[in-house]
Amino acid sequence: MYMCRDDNARQNDCPNCEQLHELLSVALEKILELQRRIQQLEREGKRQAAPFRRPEQKRKKDKAKPGRQKGHKPAYRKPPATVEECAEVPLERCPGCGGPVYEVRPVKQIIEDIPEIRVHRLQLTTYRGRCPECGPVCSSHPEQVSTAAGAAGTHVGRRALALAAALDKQFGLTMRKTTAALEEHFGLRITPGGLSQALTRLAGKLAQPFDELRSAVRASKAIHADETGWWVGGQSAWLWTFTNPQMTLYTIADRSQKVIRDILSDDYCGVLISDCLASYDPHPGRKSKCCSHHLKAISEAREQAPASDFLATIELFFKAAMLLDRLREEIDEARYWSSVAHMEQHLDELLTPPRGHTAEVRIANRLRKQRPHLLTFLHVPEVDPTNNLAERQLRPAVIARKLSCGNKTPAGVATFEVLASLAATCRQQGRSFARYVAESLSPGRSPPPLFAAE
Image (cartoon, rainbow, N blue to C red; front, top):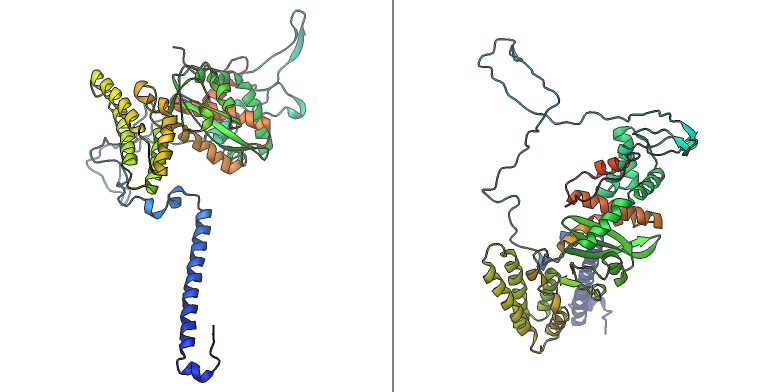
């Protein structure tokens, strides 16, 4: 391009100079726009909060008003059944001027507080000897948690260890934060390494209820399953959850079908609820595929083919099926099963014709592949149409992964599996995990049953 080098020409509005300035202006605007775009992508890459990762066009414009709907039952702190102490503060004189007070009436309140808790240190002396009939014997105490003595003779009590296990594996504190909380608020000093070793020994003592949990999972009528990435010693692994409203089992392994068969066995008689990961398909038992995952795939396909009647119809179909499941208890049984038969027939009709758009073909192939498992939730009352429960039970593990990057050793893997599984199960049952662990550590006593006998 010709550039004018005449100063007089520049002053006289040379056409070539004007054209060059216009091109430079356009180029500068594009450069600035690219810089803004790069900065935006860098910010999005660093964001962790889910709402900010959602594209602007997909965010809800008319959000529901926060809080409960009008007319809901009032919520307030209910008074406890018993109180440990009563105090009365009479009003004989005015606190301000000291004069008499009239129309005095009582005002009752109940204050629930936590008194200052400090470490209780017990020096325990037991004795060892030899019985002619039984051999070596020793005395024991209800607070004893180990027989180690000498340099290893200072122990963490069962209630303190149970609280530490709950803080770490149930409430998601790291080892260092757990030990800091114990020292700052209770005066109990323990190192993160010492706590890690103590939790490993604790997991070994809880092997019996963990085996009970595995057996309960195999005997369940329905189980949700999901998986997420994990790390073991810096190597890639997968953390799985098998859960229903009564129990949760975590296990860490690879992402193969072998994990499912090890946990459930090929003889599992219940329904396996999952997403469409291929590892679930070879299991010979009955299965149900999450409707939410199907709806998400259909929504993405509709963005590619917005005019597709098939995608719009199949989306409405799954929403109607989920609505029918919610109305199961409200409609007549004969009418319900008639509706289920109609839904099954209608689904076959929707999937039969060939499709033209690639997005339609992809969804149709996906649904044909999983056809036997699409409407299982309409036939089995214990089966939920979505796999949301498994995803919710994975969230604490995902947070733990962000904080700890998984486990360092196989012993850490076993400890996490046992304690995290029992903590989640106790919470689902409405029982205290810390109290359950403390009861399990009582000497000469087996851990309490995890599930009540029917």
